Length: 285
Image (tube, rainbow, N blue to C red; front, side):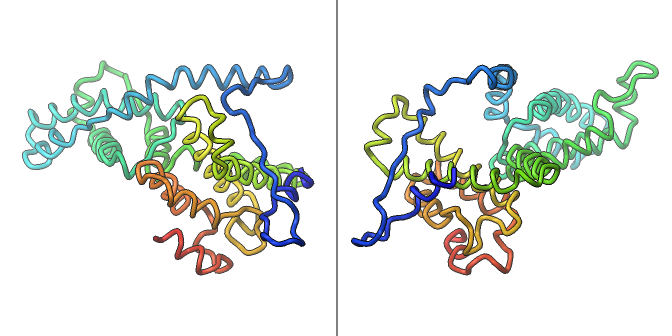
């Protein structure tokens, strides 16, 4: 991995520098090895189950109208109408939470609004308890509701979960720290080089593959920033954050903004004193 990383170091465009190497990874036709198959099949099952849930979230409308009416006129009828509108929506959010689907809170503000109203209604009891059979608790316990609230409060919930899981793995397996960070930074460089090279991009058979590689690149930077003690933004980082951000800024806003927001709000060290001012300024643009 170290040799591959050195091959990917940036060309200074002079006669003394190393030649620039580009590597193509076939994201579209990658297949698991025998040792990877069990994990692959488990992940594949989750992804297939998640397609319908993700579609529901993308079309999420929310119960804002009913909630506003219940707040303005806290009668039993208006509260009952709001509760019946919110309850099935929270069922969707629970399924989504259980599958840990990545969401963008800033793009779907109704999610947090609906769930906040649900939690307030459950805490008040009364109306909700009257609808429950004797002895039956609300279908989401207070503990689960608290975890869901923290999950949906994140700008990019799934990236947050992945970052914490990767950090936990490294903390429990310190000898693997260097291998882990080197793998993440090398893969981020590979993704950037692939996207920068029109000849490599032309090898993709599906248009959406470029967006997938963009997302993978950003995810790798975020994971590196969480795992590496000094983060991804310091001068000694082996991640080309500046090159990645500049490339993102050249993409259409609909593709670039969610990913730039992920770097702004999901990373750990962006506002650290070790982060160069020009990097913070670049991401603030």
